Length: 164
Image 1: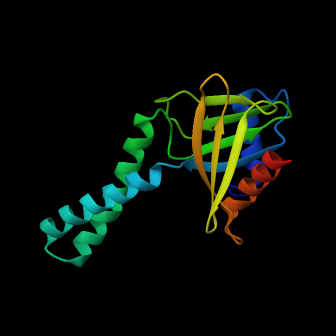
Image 2 (image 1 turned 120 degrees about the vertical axis):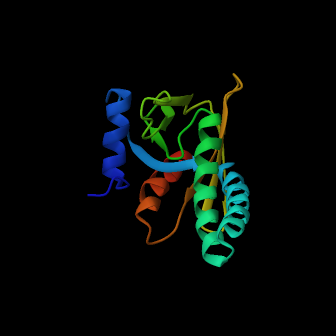
């Protein structure tokens, strides 16, 4: 079973949260701003790769490495991992870090499901999720609705719960 399978995501969230109350939906999301960091890192990496290897292959490798490094560095500068787990219980919305390696806390932020403001917008097959509350907590996430993607199953379950 894949670690992106909805049941695996629920089990992972319950391990982090302690399992009580039970998690009703869980999905894999990322910070909305990570896309900009990836583009900037890929651009810088491509330029460095082209200079170092004087060719397209070097630029391609540099872009890939630069993009990945920039995404991880930006995410951690925001106190999160690249992969975030959004877990819903009947009462709460939890945003959790995945694969922290002990560098970051497992819990990022939690919201009351009944009072949090949730705005979901579509950009192609991407779903942008903005969650905020009256205390000033806010997070902007990016998920997917790609039809055949293993990643989208948990995301779709979370999105359906958030709009219900």
